[in-house]
Every structure is written in C-alpha cells, then in structure tokens.
Image (cartoon, rainbow, N blue to C red; front, top):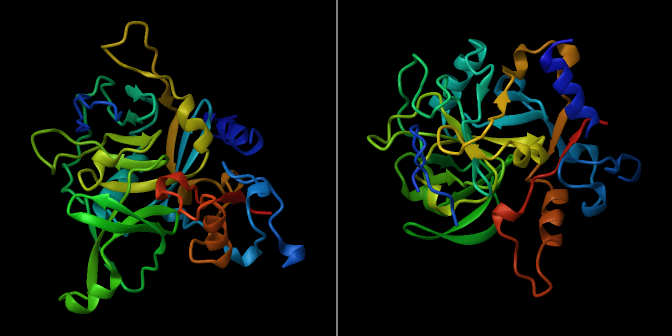
Length: 310
C-alpha cells in the first residue's frame, strides 16, 4: 500500500513579512437534504440543503497534500494567481514536494513548507514568479458578500467566491474601468494557501508556500494567495510546531506526497463536494452565524462547508 493510499484512507475514514529565509513574525428537498458530516462543519449546524447546492471540484485544479495525519485537499485558484498555480502544478508533477518538511510552523499563524533544503533558504530550479497579490474581478465572478472590513486603502466588502474568502472593490465600479473589472484580492484566513517570498523582491516567490493555521490581516495584499483547504482542515493544527535550526529538539513533520488530483488513479480520488457559495443554502448558513444583535460574522470566521459525495 502506498503512503498516499494509506493517508487517503485515514483522511476519508478518520474522518510580518513571510520570507523564504524564514524570518516572519507570528501575528499577535427533503429526500435530498444534507444529512452527512461535513469537513469542519457538522450537519447539525447547517440549514437544509439540496444536492444541487453542492458542486464538484475541478480535478485539474485540485491538489492533494498527504501527511501522516491525513490529506489536505486544496482547491487551487488560477482565477487569482494563474502563474503561481501553474508553477505549483509543475512541481507537484515533478514530485518535487515529496518528503519535504514543514520547516517553520508557528502556532496560531501558519505552516511553511516547500524548501528542499529544509532550513528556509532553498527553492526549486524553476524561475521565480512575479507577484499576484491582487486580481481583476469581472462582473461574472459572483461574490457572496458577508461583511465589510478595513484594508490598506479603506473599508471594502468581504465575502466568498467558490471556497475562497476574498475582498473586492464594488462591482458597480466595473462600468467605469477600461477592462470592465474591479480590483479584488484573497484574504489570509485559516486554510488559505499563500506563497512565501524573500525580502529583496515582491517577485521572489518560487517553491515555498504556507498553509494558514489562523487569520493574519497583515499578510493581505502582500502575498500571493493561490488556494484554499477544502477538506482535512482539522489536520492543519496537528503539524508539529517549531522552526528548524532555531528550536532545539524540533522534529518537523513532512509532506509525504503532493499530487494534482487529475493525475491520481480513479480509485484514489477523494469525492469532495463544496457548498456553492452563491446558493440559498450557503446564504442561510451565513445568516445563521450572525450575532444575537444581527452583526455579521467575519469572513475568516466562516468555513465554506464541504462533504464527501453521498
């Protein structure tokens, strides 16, 4: 049995600047109703939903990161960071990420990995990637608004596109722009995947990346977000905390395998479905999270429900 298959079975049945050199600081219908347990959100917390309220993942843009704790299923975001997603897929298909450690893990913050040297100073042989901190959002990219939040430059609407928490300029402004789009960006919430880079250039991202264990507003619009963990989030905080070369006795966990889901044998596909964030079921779910006074939940306090296909 391969390590991937073993960890896959575990996953299914078991249920501030961030630099490549690792010098970041921690940031202080009834028959079709959903009745199964979802990842991180149980059926008891969800309003009734139809099977049509759930969508399949695009396997070409889904990544399986296998660890001894289980598999992180990541929905990649070429809409936001096409060059970063392309490089991640090339490296995964080269099996570059196999057996690479989480060399820098900060409790409440993030799990950093992707360095073949294991000490925070290494990269792949591929070229560095230009920054993709923001993207141009077209009117057809529907965002389900949750609340408003302060960012550099002012207060903006936050919400969800697919599984991704994002912030966006008002889409009504698209009629005033040359390309008919508005500026938007991903938000560093728990489960977000973002690219590490060096301090010398915003265009120095290469192979190192991090998975958010918590929320960090200070990273927004400064790092390129390229994915979101949609299954296996409960394992994010199991990764061993510490920094290689800094914390005596630290034994880093590792990524056993990293694969593009489209390349995985059919029998090993994890049949994850994600609730459509433009569905009434999701909107009802978000409404249920408001405070007793009607205050909306923060975008980072909301987990888009996911489940295994019934």
